[in-house]
Length: 90
Image (cartoon, rainbow, N blue to C red; front, side, top):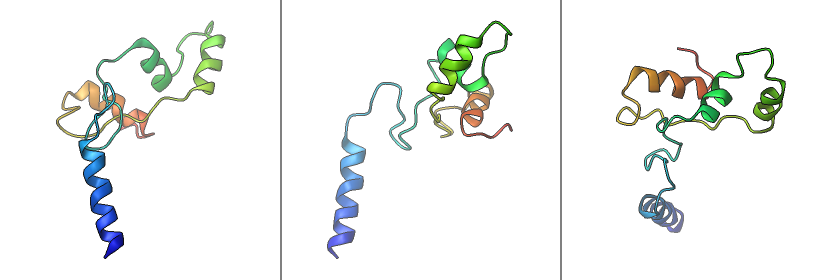
């Protein structure tokens, strides 16, 4: 009984806690918008041959997983980026 009460209280505290900027309250992942160039580079990867420094930066700080909730990424372009951040291409 104590474990279930702790679980309920922790879920309630998590729900009531102020969310960080651009973070989904439901799943705690970052929203796709605002989409920055840094985020796009970390998800897609550098696209030019002269981006060796970018390649190193991408390897050091991988892209965060993005929110997949329907209200947050209903736009097809946003959903594509969110799926890519989870390792799914489609």
